[in-house]
Image (cartoon, rainbow, N blue to C red; front, side, top):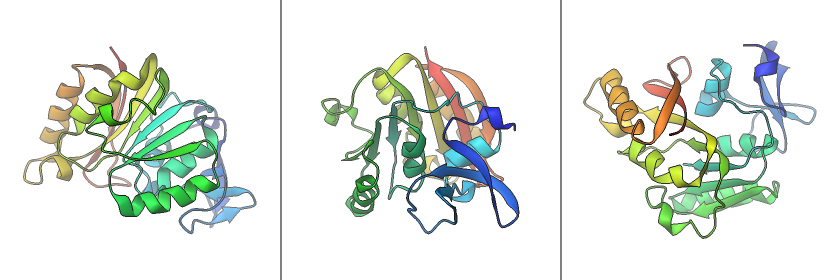
Length: 212
């Protein structure tokens, strides 16, 4: 992976003698820093893993983003460091409290205590024609969530999705689960790239797609 494939605002910096991803912003989860830059730990971030593996995310920096499954803000904090307005949806109240704290240092980050399976509950808050939909939700029906939230994406936008096989079906072969998710996604998206994230996250698939 070459440097020019990284979005503006994401760089490779040296941490413990290794070149690793970093963004510029206030620390969130105790990650190491190099001046203003903080390590983006791909082992704790599926989107970080997608970038480390060289997937063609289409990110260039400054995009408007809807992030589904923001949890306590580990990955979405990095996204907000190099993006424009970033809407962060999380269902569980406890991590949202942490997420609100992360947003205090990032004026472009908007936490939403909402269920990503019910986008109608936040259509009045989230703008339309967004550039990027990032999805990392640990629930059954992950493809359905992406299809329902397609409405927020611009026609030339991108879906960057991490599928967790064990959340979909703990008993089935992950490969079969991934095939089923991709098939369902194709109702609303053109699949541009898929790659297993096992180097960083077991039984996960990274997907890059665009709306049909």
